[in-house]
Length: 249
Image (cartoon, rainbow, N blue to C red; front, side):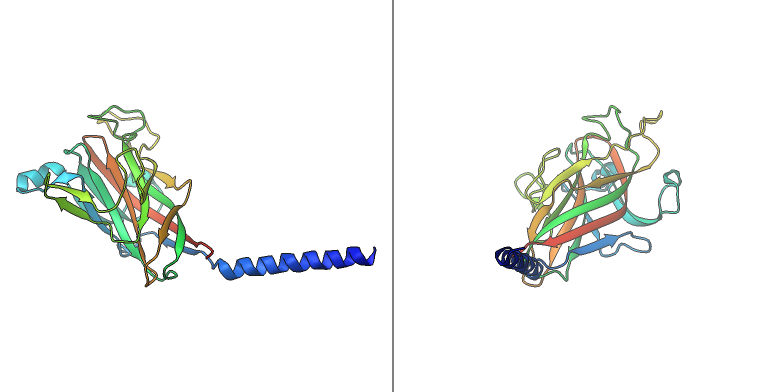
């Protein structure tokens, strides 16, 4: 080997090492968080939007709104799955949005992140069924998102309906802060009651969602269903995995 070739090889290796070191300096480790709800809600809270202000007990009863921590999942799910977040609502407004949210802290301050979700749900919505206004499975769109501000259902005085203060998109459409990950159809045929046995379905992002943390290194994650099915939807959130990948400055 000639001296010139040896010097070129050494120079190339030095450039490669410098590039790797530079990448490591500018791309900190990922932050991975998993919530399995085995004993409590783990900091998550629930809410409802795209429905009118409910003024009477009768108004409230017809919407059948409910959320809670459940110590167990339905027996038909199988296995030893313990703990889940349960949420339910009857879509009388033809546009009901049901959601869970949580504040995430301990991230790098004022930093752009790419966020990926991996969620396990227990759904009783059959595949291929016909429902009022839309299918109980394919017309209920599951969304995940992340925001630099707390997602809230805020009363709009113009139409007396609660609307989200973030851009979640409308039913089958994604918004700026929330993306459609699929629907809640569980792959089972409908039984005589128009539902199917509760079955675990998995939904995950196919492309990351962007957010910039605040000065304290915090942001909010939010999961929800945007419904075009004018009936009762019941879901168990069994597991939520979130990966925050900081972007090089």
